[in-house]
Amino acid sequence: MTGMNGSPAVARDLGREVLASPMARLSSEYRRRFSSFDDSDIDSKDIVPSEAVLPKEQGVSEILKRRLADVYLISRLAWTLYGYLFLGLSWWVQLLRLIMFASFLMPGFSQMIFFYYFSPRVIRSVPYGVESRNVLDIYLPRRRWRRQGQCPVVIYVTGGAWIIGYKAWGALFARRLSQRGILVFCIDYRNFPQGKIVDMVQDCNHGISWAMNNCYLYGGDPSSIHIIGQSAGVHLTQLSLISQARRHVDGGTYPCSIPSWNPEKVVGYIGVSGAYNVVSLADHLHRRGLYKNLFSTLMSGPDGMPALEEFSPTFLYKDMPEDVVRMIPPMTLFHGTADKSVPVENAIEFSEAVKGVGCACKLHLYHGKSHTQPIVEDPMRGGRDKLMDDVLSVIRNEDCFNQQFPMVPNVLIKAATLVCPF
Image 1 (spheres, rainbow, N blue to C red):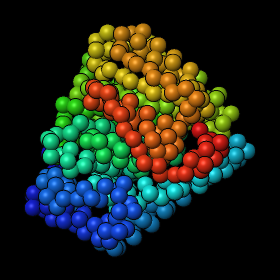
Image 2 (cartoon, rainbow, N blue to C red):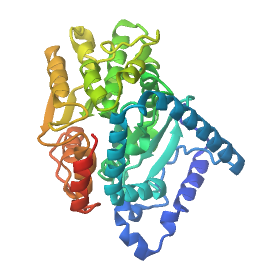
Image 3 (cartoon, one colour):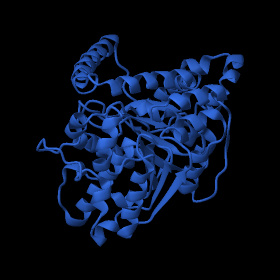
């Protein structure tokens, strides 16, 4: 069975290694300062489910060799990307704004970095495939939730404009879901120029299939699986979902349906600030620094030709056969009306197309919110996290209301909002 590697005794030993992390050794005074990192939730008996698998420990030479290979790969890809992006003024302006945005929110990001690397509830870089970046992070629910039985499962695919996506971008969102009893799998995937759109979707298929088949090993409920995408992650997971539905109906093999997984196992789909119509986005993104020559190459099919309409979920739902429609799970979409990266009209058009063929779809608009505010700035501000409450309400099928402690001073969040490139 995929995901099995060794006996329960080995897994228990790995759990003890997790307990030996620096977080577990911090003094009580220092730990109180970082109480939001959930270290008080540690229990040696259920840090990791008895059959869960952690990455194998590597020697120093193996780690060094892998790091050098990563440096070479990143350098080569960065040079390729330079030829597409860095010759235009718009990209430099957006890059400067991104650096300022991250700098203002660094107090919050530093807390998340600490949590990501030292929390015993995070299992990082578990391989799900053989390609580069075919790894995922697992966020275990708090102990009190795991004691109640199997937990709902979320398979989460982050955004990043198909170029700078990374699994750790989902740490804040995944952490808050796991604090509230949700088992989260955050999938990494190849970005451009390492891969094009079909490669990215196939990576997502591998990750989704792995999480579905192995979630029970980590205390997840296989009958309660939701897929959540954010920004470009919405685009990728929608292409995956549509292709899988078509494949299960007509038996055909589509480039975006490899490998196969059963969409009927997904009880709900959630899209946050998603990109649905890349045809209409092409000109908009070009003006914002994601130039057409790059975008057309990124959205090319197996034949190397640009195929923006074929890779636009909005168009794929139009005239969708009824038997394929029945394979699509209910959808809930969240989008800010002040989104500068993906205009809200993109989500409205998609919602109308989906409902037009009979799919269940609800679109919630966050008035005055940007591309990142619902998922980055608002959670760091403290108080009520509206997106988190809305997402939990969908997953648990009941009204949810949660209060958050602030992670960043409000003045810095306002400054970050002003310079936000998204």
